[in-house]
Length: 162
Image (cartoon, rainbow, N blue to C red; front, side, top):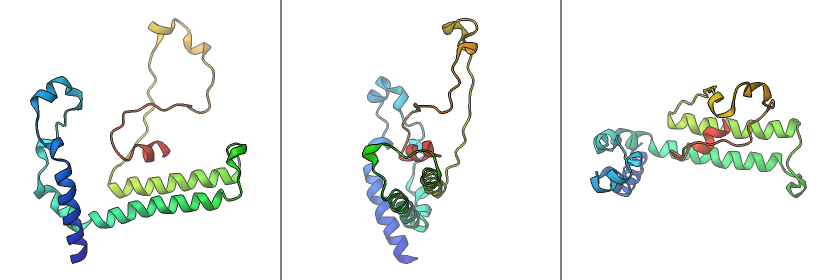
């Protein structure tokens, strides 16, 4: 426990120094780019981060990187013998196993950070742009080919997998 606390403290102080430019309020910069301003940085204090850094940070990092390594190994094992130059997996059991591995390990990584995700499907009315009856002319699409989102952190890839 003492070693974990020391490692967590060292890691925290290293990354705390790296985030100095995000914590400082720069009005000249923020006026030009208000959408990128960190409104929560004023609440960041060492005292709020120390308990997590001392008690859980190293363990959570090990779990996170362990998930990445386990996902890589399991996917490599399950795709052994497949020639990706000839194309992707066809639908079937092996493809479902690989999907399950990605979803499982990305779910563990997301849960390890304490973040809960939800998917909300929103139906918008585009009649103004596409004209009356545009929904009747739509093709029935099974899967979305492109996902567009803001890049808000290192978990974006995991969240899109889930």
